[in-house]
Image 1 (cartoon, rainbow, N blue to C red):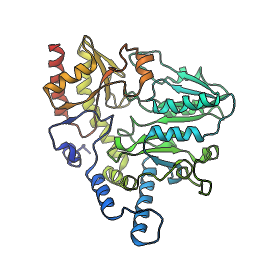
Image 2 (image 1 turned 180 degrees about the vertical axis):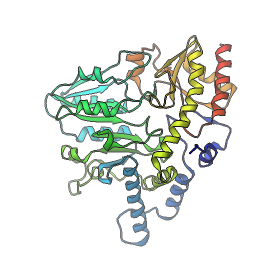
Image 3 (image 1 turned 30 degrees about the vertical axis):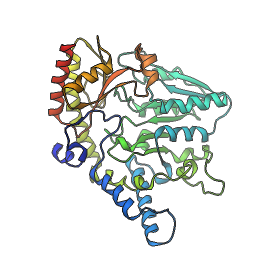
Image 4 (image 1 turned 90 degrees about the vertical axis):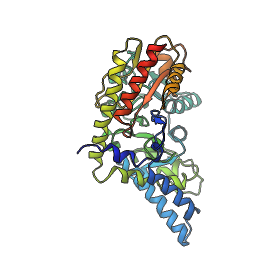
Length: 400
């Protein structure tokens, strides 16, 4: 089945304007049904959960369906997930609650968004644990190399934290292989940041065999809310943060210091409805179409001698998602972005994107705040948009 770009675009109201959104790794546009669901909830069922009157029952049921859909999205059980304001907050909550022992070692990838680094670095400093930084030898196309990981692992390893895909390079990590290696050590847990991958690929936490997985719904066409998964097999290693009189039967009850946003949670089923009954086929169509989009851009970037790409240079959907970063010799990244903005409606950004350690320690840019130029696509972008973008980029490079 061919991907229907016109049908997909018709579902995102924000696309009905001149602005062309190419900053999607920072946040996607929201589905029409998600917007309508949140609005309708606030109009008709905006009450406290758990009471027995009619509207409260309806609100409670809708919230529960939101949790069920959120769990189904990654092939988890509802009791294995927790929703909250951000992946940063959820991972900090987990780091505070997870059981550690003196001498434990935490292996943290320098390819991480800081959300999956700061929580573990902070708790290690607080408890006197050891952090081992998992770096990368190739500064231009850094990866989470399983062989480099092996040299860091030991019987003291308690957790390995890394991204499913980098929000700078777009390169996909071999999570399944890494999980297999890490789980050779009995107490070692696998903690994956899936924020940059979840908008582009189907996620199955059971197949990946991860212990912890986090991502943000506002980058997957939904509301501004995040999700944390922790496998039921490790729940006995998580101390509850909740009030003493509360039940601790689920991850949400253990970690959430208050309920997640009612109106946002209950809108999540609309995202799953958008993907349809054959979810695997939908994701395959999305990946194949996005591969075409990133090839248009990468073909130009690879031929332009003044441009250095950071990340996988090929457009293969097996190797990368359409999050593409680069620098242009002779001009600051933000200045380059602004030159494009003067000439066109294309919207993207520059900076370190909170992957500060990657930009500083591995890529080695001198001006970390200026960072890279990042162009990030989603399946609602068009081939015509990317072809037009390349023309503008070519003009700007020629003019500077």
